[in-house]
Length: 262
Image (cartoon, one colour):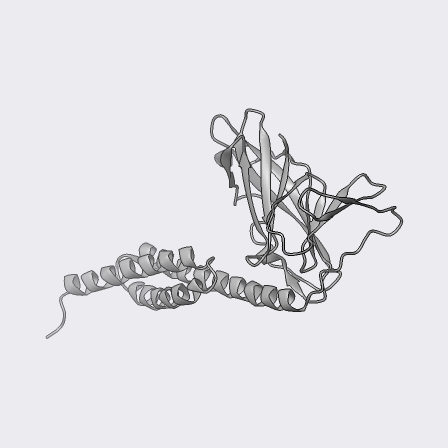
């Protein structure tokens, strides 16, 4: 006996809901190393269910679930590749740092036992030494080199103006942008996607504006290579101290904080 249309529609609707839920789980877990292997499986199942549910009445929900599943798998592949690259880099890098040619370099001790150097361009570079887990605090425009050879600097923040009227900041908020400059001074390849950056302004968490700047700088750097990408954050209109925390990967011995009044 043929299945009534209402019954078939109900089955497809259930598959659409399941696809959406699995897609959300996959997307949320895709940025978490190791765990994203399991969530990628859930995302794949969501893709299959979503494809089947497209034959039902809830095509939009099924399409969203399928799209989230595909996005989750793509992000998982990128994160896993970055993780593998980071592990190899940590195991093979010597931690040697290079100074810019044509500048005079004078070492100076820092409070955490690292070495800071001042060049003719008035920029300071700190280098990770020993096994200290102490945080390093630098000003914008300065740079730090970790034992793996990753050298990262944060430029001085500047205002960011959004041209799209629908993406303007909320009342009492504003956008600021800064450039992240990454140099691979190690002996192994390094994937920039493994850099972890967060920010806070005037003691409150600053949210990244994912609609602006370079959201996922998935770039492989060979030894000696460098790249610059832009990040945009939402902060309060009131002046205050902006603190940007930087780690080159999840295995970094310490975190570097770039701070300044904005």
